[in-house]
Amino acid sequence: MRINPPPIHRSSEPSSSPRRSRLNQLEKIATVLDAMKQGAALHCEFGRSGANWKLSNGHSVTDDIARRFIAHTAVAGVGDTLFADATPQTFRFITHKKQRSTVYD
Image (cartoon, rainbow, N blue to C red; front, side, top):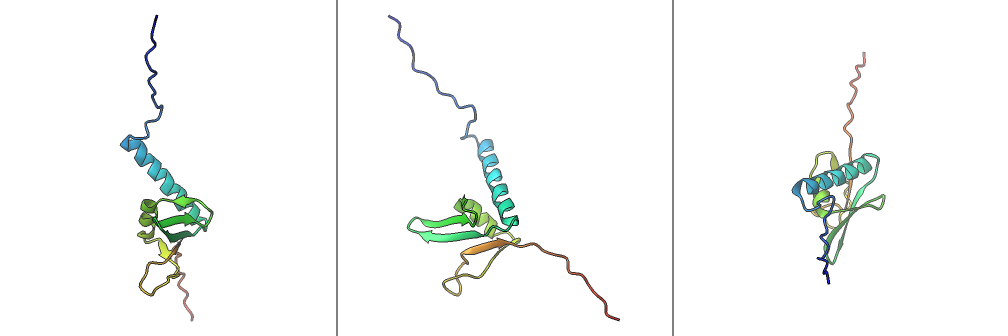
C-alpha cells in the first residue's frame, strides 16, 4: 500500500515579499491619486474601530495611504470640521494654476 504525501501549496505571486508589498502599495497610491485628480474627494468617518477613509467614488482607502495623502501639499482639507482645531473630514486634490500677469496701460 502506497501513501501519498500531502500536497505542497505554492503561490505563484508571493504576497509576503517586501517588493510585492511595496508594489501593491504604490498601485493603490496611484489609484487614489488618479481618482482625486479627476475630482473625487477623500472622506474620513470615525467609527468604533477608528478612522475609516473612503473616496467619494466609493473606493475604500487604508489609513496609512490616506494619511500620506493628507500630508501632501497638493491635498487640502475643505474645512468641514466639528470642532475649530480638529482635522477636516473631507480632502480634495488642488491644482496650482499659473496666474497671468496683466499690465494695464
